[in-house]
Image (tube, rainbow, N blue to C red):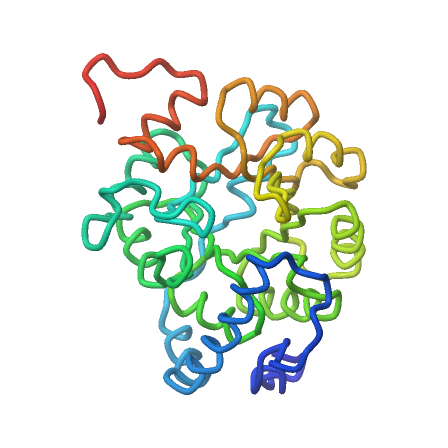
Length: 306
């Protein structure tokens, strides 16, 4: 939405249409997802116009403070964004019981909340990650934690979708967007009271993301470094520790992917990183909440999974 309150013309068609060049030389797996997502967005706009989403937003409760739940400059502890994730292109279905109706995001959310998570990340992409926008409201009716919509955001329309579905924050992936697109999405997110996690995978994208953040009026924005190499699909925690010195404000920094042990968290803290997004490691366990307790150094309950 522009400063005059009018819907941007960019809502009429995706940022990156079928003829748009690939601005960041996306790896094959990400390029496939982005191509499909463009078509999905076009269809969604026909099925549920922006005007309908705006009506829904007018009636929805205020957002929860995702940024405030995580950014605590005077607190040396670690804050966990615990992720609800059913499957991925690289891993497939994470556990057999997550198939079809056996996947219960509300139960996982309660486990995370009871185990001390500061916020929840929810995959909403359906085709590649088995998620759903409906999961967000299901989760928020069960726990008091703020919820991030984790998806491939390419178009302002998806921010209206997120807000109408109850999300408190959204993920933006710098590899999928140019500077102008990031800036416009940040402006719209601010107008919709959505916090943002701006994710980067490379040094080059970290530098340009920080440049956009410095110019943005949206101050409820976290900066995420994803430890996954998108070309090799492997993770390495050293990716965060190698880039951390380039980050202007470490209090907003989030390390994502490849975090599996209490030692990993201690390593991040030693480098001034106090927020971690962890998903697949937790979701591979029969009780994700128990796994969250374990990584924070708490011994498992003698009475078994809670």
